[in-house]
Image (cartoon, rainbow over all chains, first blue to last red; front, side, top):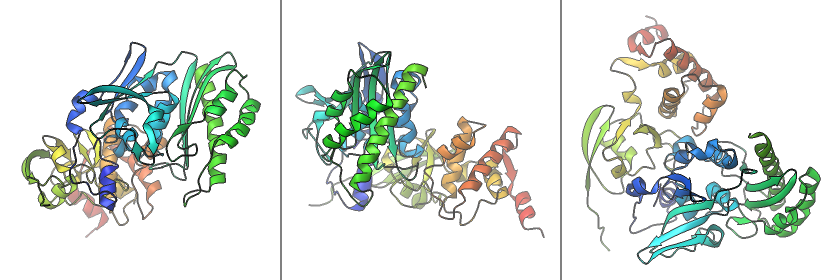
Length: 264
Length: 178
């Protein structure tokens, strides 16, 4: 258990009944940090969303996606408990931090008595609330390569209310621009077809190397339609989710363009 | 399988007073505050960190006391509504909430007051948008939301004018004149 904002709620609902819980909170002294250098940004697994929102990342125009995360994540009092490692560890599709980190092509460090191993975040997700972590392993660090000056990130989600919004759809994007040309782009969503966060590779391929324009984005929607399968549930129908994914992707990319060019 | 756990003894400082409490590992901070220390301002609304009624300030951070295991509070300083003003006084936020006629049933109030205090401690002159952001996780089923915004602005004004505490009797006599 990291912050406990997911596990304790599940226990209260009677969904999970663990015999033993290992509380990692005392490790916060060692595992709560945000630092950069050696070409990577490294985030300790027990860094809370609040600490992330007060770190140097939010004042760097390249990492404004973290400000989006801070603004849209649950409520002020949950940000002080919820951790970035926990957000990944729960393996829930509606994990804002995990989706943003996917767009940043992050890697996760799993530590155990046998040593450390780095796993790409996207390979970590294997099913609903299920991640490829061995029982004796612990998520200790998340790292991603520093992104170039001419690029930025964004995270958007939509729900009926703002506080506590889980989101019908969560979309995050990273894009690097050279003049008006898209040189690199990564798009991640809460779900592509499987019940865990994933990247829209075909749409990315389509966009790469093209001129940035609304028309290009609209054309890419066709690719995305084929790539993405959405589900219907009591919260939103699949058609709406698919449409919303396109809209949020477009908004993300426009936001990134403005962030790259004007810093906001 | 028998239940294998041992009680823990924790030291906490609540509203400036030190307490030593024996807790079970599965007890939550809200249980300790309400049932062991008798601080009934801490309300249990949903018990799952969604309503904001149980929010307290722990070591200068806003936390939902229903999601904090009691042992985690060991050695920490906690502030609840009972502790925001000295005996016989009320805090400017409480006065502002009364003045703005926000109080209907009052169940969400302890959470609102603590969240507003946390906001005003960090930002003495918040905008509407900042107040909305600070209070977004607090549910009020009576629907006083718009009045909260007015109230927090009023409280900020009181505090800027140096009027942090108000006498309870004086406030009462204005509401219920003899």
